[in-house]
Image 1 (tube, rainbow, N blue to C red):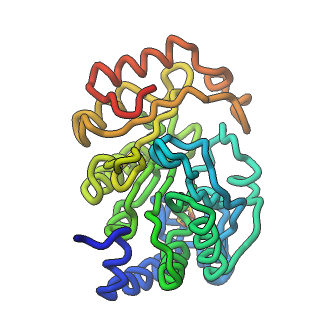
Image 2 (tube, protein in one colour):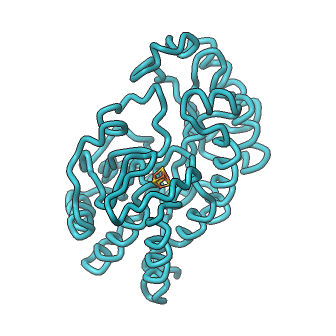
Amino acid sequence: MPLYPSYLALIESGELDERIEKLKKLLSPCGLCPRQCRANRAEGEKGYCGADYRPVISSHNLHFGEERPLTGGMRPRGSGTIFLAHCNLLCVYCQNFEVSYLGEGSAVSESRLACMMLDLQDAGACNINLVTPTHYTPQIVSAVRTAAGKGLRLPLVYNCGGYERVEIVRLLDGVVDIYMPDMKYADEEPARRFSCAPDYFDRCREAVTEMHRQVGDLVLDESLTARRGLLIRHLVLPNGLAGSEKILRFIAEEISPASYVNVMSQYRPAGMARDYPDLDRHPTRTEYDDAVAEARRLGLTRGLE
Ligand code: SF4
């Protein structure tokens, strides 16, 4: 019987310590995400994402608003959610402006982060759900190492914006059990205008392909709680700006038609979206229904309402 969550096997073999060392080398100068700013974060320098060394946590709590497989399926217990401040995407329409742009929260040590994970486990969480983890990956994995030594046994959810370096995702093989990336844009122009990341789709495709290689399609236990696998989120934007059809076709044809995909309707103009006329409205019901119909046509039925 393989050890579960999977980071226990890496701890037993001693490999987790090697991964932490490799990740920490990539933190300063920073090359943790495709921007590769080279900021010397260990010396307090900040890169594009605004993060320096110590992880800033905006909140940690049991969250029941996530997808059902993440909150406990038929027996909701809540997802042990840790919201990390700052962000490597900084989308102009961000709904958490204070957290992503202004970095609202408390800077904590790795041992304090480990305690938060253990607190969430004690509170009954069914996983540790790391929201916007990319720029703090080394500190998170190090905290998991500490928490596991004190009894952490929950799977990790890597809940990211999808703008990832595949080299970093490879270092998370066997650390993360559940990947939950966004797939935000299929086209270069909206990715450049709204997130300053013209290579978004290329980097996201590489990362999601590697995530799926590691963990496969989403596997649920008998209570319909996520145990391992890939769960993709796609937010429909107005005026076809997200390229929904292209993204869904990529998932169905290049990843797996059994992928769990949450096609989300809740876009609203927030942050600086008012400055972009084509972003300055909710998607219409028809725009959203068309995306869902396309997902169904492609056979992507897992995760649809
Ligand atoms: S994680 Fe932040 S500092 Fe590091 S490369 Fe990305 S944007 Fe730059």
